[in-house]
Amino acid sequence: VARPAHERLGVERDRQPGQREGACADVLERRAAPLGRAATPVGSVEQWARTQTPAGAVFAVPPSWSGFRSHARRAVVVDFKAFPFQPEQIPVWFERLADLAPISLPERADPRLQATLDDAFLRRAPEALARAASRYGIDYVVRHRSAPLAHPAFELTHDAGPWLVYRYRAHEPELA
Image (cartoon, rainbow, N blue to C red; front, side):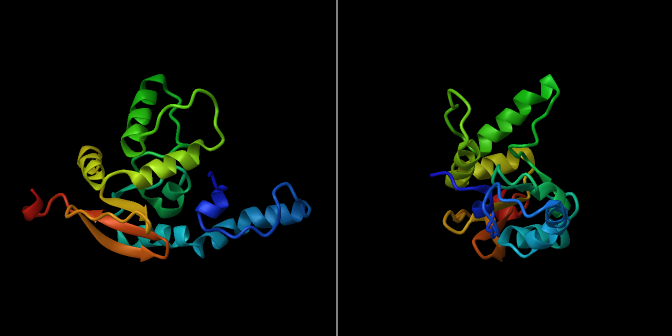
């Protein structure tokens, strides 16, 4: 069952979808949104990434985390919304998405697509993620606590409630 993005991100929703409180409230909400996000588990992961990892670090995150790149100021391998508009880059984007979150292609538009991709990412086998990390230069992988990475190539480096961040240990001698 697909859950709304605010639930997947662990963000509280103060009002019902479509309910408006006026233009001033909307402006305030947009400007204060980064502050509210920082108090969420995802915001904690983003802040940790921004302050505790090298600026050139590359992350693998659930595909629906389209704000991670800008909030963490770190690169991601792929996300659903960063669709390339140059025809030659579309196959590269799709290949990366399929490597990290393999699903059957929907026959038509599906509002649950992002949730389905997130689920596929969280079910991805540790061995497949290790191959993807090597292929794409991934330094860190973010996983939900319900899908931990039990593999010698990954070391738990940050715990943010429901989210765990693992470092890919590709360059350590015993794993080479």
